Image (cartoon, rainbow, N blue to C red; front, side, top):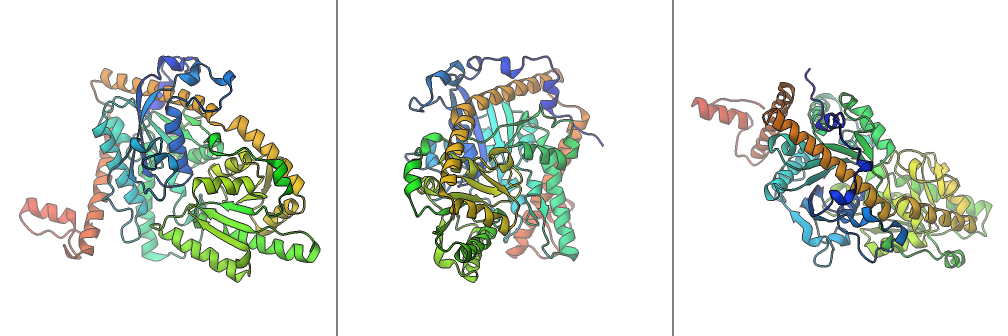
Length: 542
């Protein structure tokens, strides 16, 4: 088959100056950067987009950055930032985008809110693809002069920008994790039994196969691809074999998400040592893949174990908090499931559920926790462990995925196997030895301050932006040299993608029209169009 070599691969083979040798002050002046994100709610992906936007602005004067780090590179960041999204609820978003006080609130543009997020409770990935296509088109329509378009979550609309609309700016894609590995029958890429068999299962595999093909095909069109961890990079390379050459290390760069240290109060370890009611805290979105149920089982085991072995030890309460969107069916269902499990384990009176916590409450919980238990298995990166360690709380997490790159086992927390006994044993060590928890908290605070602060992230992001701009320029020069077009292989891939997307759109419209009785069960959009042009009724089952 004909395979297009990505523009960002070609650009690296041209004779250019490495990004590390380019002075940021020569490029990053009065640039316009447009971010495109599906749903600007509360989560790790949204937090990353906000931090990328903040890092694109000039650093604030009160950023508490040491004078030694305020160099020419740091001061050179000066871009106009815009964020395009299809949804941003003022009751479920970060403070930076809340109207009117958020520093980025005036930069947010909500487009395509009329587009559905699901079709009768299904087709979420398909609807997301259509929404990101529309948001990208509107972003380009409003800002065709943008220097850089930054997309995340889904790469579906990248060819729209680079090939069909021929944007003059660079296009950067931030891959949190392959969407191919985030389906309902997997947990971060690990298949789970869902009981679906027969025709429905076959249709779903075909449907998912089309979307996976589109994801793999469109990612290659980006000028630069970033990932959030080495684990994610390995997974991208594993599940997208056709991109193996394009997505070598030099073309698939790691940019670890940061935390804004100014949002957190510096922990008081002396005070924490004296407190007797420091809770065990879990902070996650209320989603099944976050694996929070294992913590409830471990906590029940902990209470039973300590009551029998060490009755004199005070057992701290458990607080389960996190992002909660009442529009999200899974959020609503899973919160009820966790409460039911707590009741079944007879620990409901010892567990507090705090959905949709505000930033101030989030910081308070992380600062005052005896420890933070982070339960997701094969998590892509995980911003919660970073925030927890800076807040002075040790972290217990599954020994897999991103946490293996951020938690120092035995020094800033514990990495354990994905079972309730292992979690129970780790919690028991800290509950029975508060001074150990405090010492680990001190280690974690210093570790995060040095490695994951905004000032270091801002410098890294500046270099990535320059790299994307450089590669975007190479892409445009190649287009001009080839008379404004690509080779036959690229055109073929583009036409196939256009046809695939058109068929998917036609199928969605057909389903909706049948649902509301506008067309019969034997009719379809394709059939009606053919009938119109042929002047006769043509039944065509899409």
